[in-house]
Image (cartoon, rainbow, N blue to C red; front, side, top):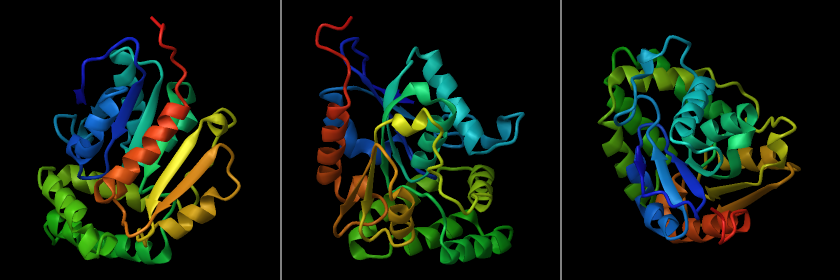
Length: 263
C-alpha cells in the first residue's frame, strides 16, 4: 500500500489497479492528485505485498475483495473517500458502491469492464482450456496484445506485462477464474443508495473489447458521465495521462465536500 502523508484538511483518493498491475500504473496520477488530496493506492490480493488469493477462508471473488478493501480503509481510519480504478479496479469499485456505498464519495473508473462480448468470452474459455499446459505469463501476453494491439498502446501493454511477471501463478489463475465466472450482465446494477453516487467513466475510443458494451450499459444511468478519449486504448490513464488527469481532477474537485476550515 502506498499513501502520501495524510492531511486532515484534505479529502482522500483511493487508487485501485487492474489485474497484474500495482500502484506503479498510477505514477502519472499520484503527483497530480497529491497536490490537492491524500492519495492511497492499494495492492489488491495476489499483488505486491498483499495476501495471497489462496489465503482466505471464504470463496475468493470480487465481493470478497471489495470487503477486504473496505476493511483495510476502516483500519486506517478512512470512513469515506473518492475512488479511482482502472479495469479490474473499476469492477471492485462497483462492488463497493453496491455493498458499502457509504464509503464511496465519488468514483472514477477508467477502462471499465461491464460485461464480456462473445469474442472476449471465447478468448477466456480458450485460455481456460490451455492454462494448465501453458505458462501463465504467456496467457497474459496473449490477452495484453489482443486488448491493446496498436502501437500507441505499447507503453501500457509493456508496463502491465512487466508488472504481471511479479505475480504468482496461483494468484493469476485465481483472478482468471473470477473473470470466467463474471456474469454476462451489466455490473452497473446499482442499489438505491449506490445510484446517487457521482460516477465518471473514462475509456479510450480504441478499447475495442469493452467500450461499445460500456456505452450501452450506461445509457440512462443517473449521476453518471462517460468520457471517451480519442486515439487511446484500454489503459487510458497511462496512454493519455494528461487528459485523464484533467477529466478526473475536474470531476473530483466538483464532488469535494470538505471546506477549507474543516478539522
